[in-house]
Amino acid sequence: MSHELLDAGDDSIFDIHTNATGPQGKLPLTDEMLRTWSSGDLFGLTQSAGMGWKPEDLLGPQYL
Image (cartoon, rainbow, N blue to C red; front, side):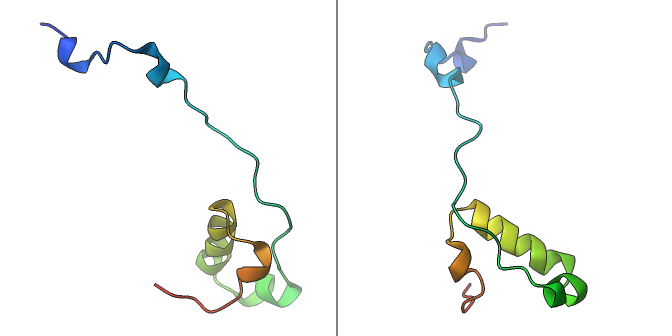
């Protein structure tokens, strides 16, 4: 069986970056948020920050 279909012929495709510098700042967490918010909402904050949102914008209006 030939694997030519799967061979890109260019080994540079395997030079991938698996990490990068994260955003500056810190999450705007409060004691009240940690006690009362659902874990999903808290995870959403960390996910948004990880995607590059500025921490000061995380608690603003949410749009889909």
